[in-house]
Image (cartoon, rainbow, N blue to C red; front, side, top):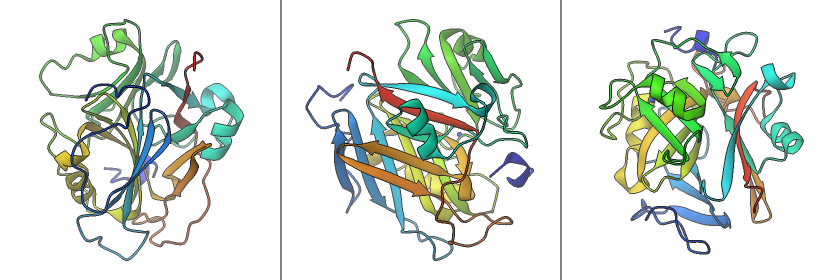
Length: 282
C-alpha cells in the first residue's frame, strides 16, 4: 500500500529463560517461544472480517530488546528493494517487517531518519505516530512509539535522543484507545507496536479489515500494547522470522482498489524494513 493508494487521503524485561507474560491472553491464543526473548502469538480475530479472506488470525511477534537489536534497512542505502526473506538472509537478520509505506522510487511517505542517513526528512502532517529506537542515551528505552498531540510530545527531543525515527499512521491513541480511522477501505496489514513491558511487537494480519476495526482488536488490554503504528497494507505487508525454533512467513494480499482478492502467495519486494538480530554479545 503506497501512500498514493491509501486514501491519497498510529513484568519489565522478562528474566532470561522465563516466558514473557503480558497478561491473561485472549481465548484460544496460541503462544510459542521461538527462542529466549522471542515469542510468537496467534490471536483469533474478535471482530468478524468484512470478507472471507486470510486465516482469521492476527500474528504478534514479541521481541525482547535486551536480547535483540533493531535495525532499519533501506533500498536508498543498500541499493535496491528486496523481499523480506532476502533482506533477512543478506543482512543476517532473525526477522523482518515493513518499515513504512513508500512513494514511487521507494522513499518513505513519512519522516524516516537513520543516524546521518535521511531517507525522508519531511514530517508528514497526516501521520500521528513516531517509532523511535537506537537510543543515544542509556536513560531512554530501547524502543518507543510516540503520538503527536500526546502529553510531553516533543519531536525535536525524540530525534535528538534516538538515531532512528520512523513516522506513519497511529493506531492507538494517547490512552491506548483505538484510533477510529475514517478510511473505509479494507486491506491486509502490517504494524509495529510496543507493549507495556517494553518489548517490540511485529504484527501481521492477512485477513483484511477496516483499520478502525483492526485498531479496536489490537487495543484489547489483554494484548498489553501501549502504542502501535501502521507500516503497510495489501500484498506488500510482510512478516518473516526464522530461528531454530521455527519459521514465520506471512504475506498480505487484499487491498481495496488495488488487489481486492486473497490470491497473493508471494513476498513482494519492499524498499524499507525494520529487522532484528541478536546482540553481538549473544
